[in-house]
Length: 138
Image (tube, rainbow, N blue to C red; front, side):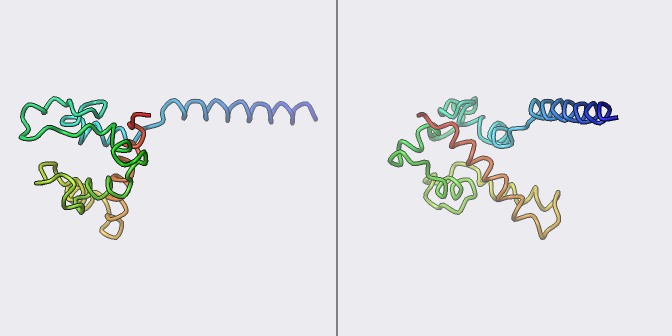
């Protein structure tokens, strides 16, 4: 009888490990997904300012991989959030970049209950800011 209990435990543990392994393989990088959908056309797939729309823009796009270097070695989380959200008035000079906070709010109102739309918008922007932090040249 003890052997059956151990076999059941071993079977459960091995099954759990297989499920964890499968879920690790299907992990979604939400920040990268946000970047690819909203930023890469202008800032490029690696953030260096060489997106496919660069020739259509009036001003050159920023190299997003140097944000920390330009800020004394510290990634400017709050400033990046405000630029994306649209609350940083001078972040893009004449504001050539779309105000993604407004766009995300419109999408949230269509997809999420009104009480939670602010959290939805902040979550999307924070995922994007976290991804930009990972793009920084070290």
